[in-house]
Image 1 (cartoon, one colour):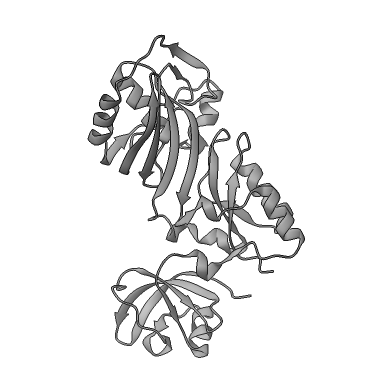
Image 2: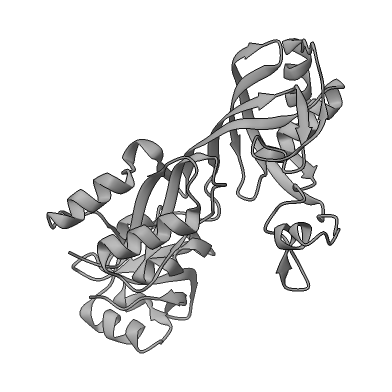
Length: 300
């Protein structure tokens, strides 16, 4: 069983993303693994984990959107902007107009400026803000720009709403809940959160930790190979091309066996005849050169 690639896990509730990575490493008996974007402990859903050289894939997956199911409550604010935090302010007899919610989301679609929660991974002088906040060091988070592709209201009650959110990497759904509630004149926090899509994968294709352990114990394939994990255009190269790439040389046009469309300036996955990933390259043809290596990989 190959030990290089990506594992898709459906993270359970009340488990940290780091704990999931540790469990994957133990089940697969690998020394290197890392997730491609954490989920808060109370959240569930898709956690993409790079294994071995798979940890080097993330920079080439950033363009993929993320999709979430969220339940937003309006009866309070909390210090973490989710249900796990300490209540800051309670609101009784809340009755939110769902049309006002729709209007707010229409006004906050596209590129928006967002202030992350105070408990977040943003760093100040090398230390994450959540650690500083726990140490009673008050450093306001820096505003950032994120993209909200679409929001669908799935169901609602007097003091809650269920939504599906499609957004860019780095979007804080907790901040959306907080800001929505504040604009409506009531509380705003996440009651539940589930990630459906990330890095070009869907949670329907993920395994639970128990399923991973059972399949790995039987020797079944559970790791998506490097070349299949990247959702970008792919080209094959000759054996001479493989040697040249492994030596770190610019990719010669004579090495490339396939034609790709609309690839100039874009990332392309370069593989050998066995579909093993040799590198991710930027296609920049000039004077016999096809492109240049952005990140190299060693085939098994």
